[in-house]
Amino acid sequence: MAEAEVSHIRNVILARYIFVDGQAHMNSLTLSSGVWSGLSPLLRNSWRRCAEQYAIPTDTTLGTDILCSAELRQARERMGVTMKIADPELDRLHGIVSTLDYNVLLADPAGIVVARRGAPPFEKGCRRWHLWPGANWAEAVAGTNGIGTCLVEGQPVTVHRDQHWCTNLRYLTCSAVPFYGPDGHVAGALDASSIRSDPSGRVALMMEAVLVDAARRLERRSFLEAFRNRTVLLLGEGNGISLPMIALDDKRIVVGATYAARTMLGIANPEVTSVCFDLGARAAGVPDFQEAERTVIEGALAMVQGKIAPAARLLGVSRSTLYRKLKNLPPAPSSITG
Image (cartoon, rainbow, N blue to C red):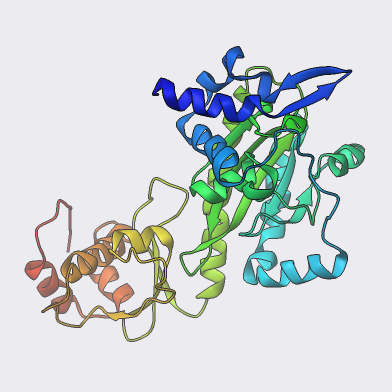
């Protein structure tokens, strides 16, 4: 990183002190302690936003303006189907992480905590640290943190102790991942947080893997719920926090697609909230249509171990039609049996 940029960030931080027992301390043990050099590029970007875009003083404490019960109820209602299917997943997650003294939080797309799972003995501490329903963990409000930063970056984030922008959070470790809804948009974030001593942060990094799996499970459940009367195809396993899934109606029209499926099908515009195209339509004049069709067909074949007849039934076409489509599509490496 350029020395001038380090100097700029340093100057921003040097202007903001907190006082503990009458002594002045700089944010996160200051840059000179090596904290800055230990930050990932993702967390460095977050620190820059906190300093330059949000102008958050490093001695900022989280406000006491936790949502009231009526506001929290409205926030939960806005989550729609997610709140309906999230409870068992949160229970499962807490069962995995509770032995490590971690709490599980579910946040909406704005960073508001709408649900929590945690052991009763830690409730007082969780309220103090705002690990509680109604708390606002948006990055623009709370600085660099798991929930807020993962929602901004759109990827898993672990923030360990003094990697937080606000020094009052320096005893907190949190890992969080965004998860997608059935419309392909970010539906919220899953978080595992603890004030347990973990000097190396290794436990927190393991939490990321657990949360990524939970995010995929939550997306899958919400997609199946949203399209429960449709044929749903999994287009491979995917390798991120989203599973490539599409929903077909009885006329072979694609009426739904997850974030990963939209990416595979070339639907990159986030403003496109609905998906609808005919697998039987001709591809003339439609960019990337053949690639999209091939992806759907390969997904169906993968589900039935490459067998034509079952794949044709899934897609709602005859065997001869599927053979013809395969013959006309660009060649792709696959093993097909009759």
